[in-house]
Length: 313
Image (cartoon, rainbow, N blue to C red):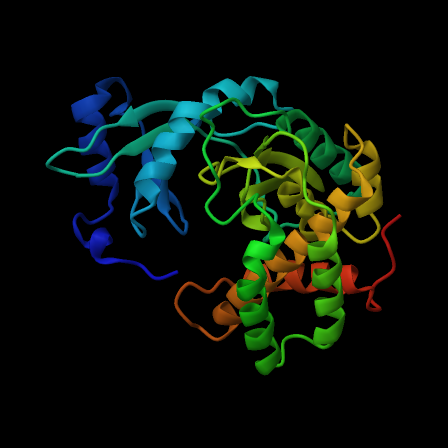
């Protein structure tokens, strides 16, 4: 993903955040402001100890995603067992900053790409509880996914390109094994139930850890309705070795074999994306994040049954 000229319209600074707050939320304008993170779509600015401000900066789609979070996350958050950023105020576009922006609660914790879960049992149970609570039939009018939650066959071209590119770069030791996992997932029966709520973007940078387990989930910009197998890829990407089966055993209602086969296909897609992003980070290319590579490689190793570290006990 490349940054557009949209981030040139206003320099992102703490003073900009204070100006926006003074105009629309003066009750918050005197709080300390500091940069928290730069994501794909938004910059995150800490606002005191318990709030954050998200400003779109890199993609045109970010505006719609912030409005979606503001509309839907407050109704879902009370039923989720892990803390999530709950929208508190949707800032309207203005002459100073002609895009929407969002004030949310702050969720403490370290991103799992930087501090992976190490307590296999606790992490598996926490992830299963979160997915169980979230995966409920979505109402009419729930947002559709952007390249998430639909039939896996729709993403065959992207899979083929991603695998070929990673193989050419020497990043995939056994591409045939990866193709076998993908082919089995695509051949699995399609989801026949109603569209379920999905987070849609459960990669390690969007899941927070503390004390070896998961303590929060952030960035609901890809919240959508679809096949729960999309989110059920997350155990392969997020958990330590030996914990995937425990997570699926704790998930309710128990996922059928076809759903778990499709989940493996979604996990392959997520792993390939992470491998590319990690490699870009290693090479110093724009958009790269070196911390994404190790969990993606570990997931692909587990998915293909390649040899590796012994499961955690």
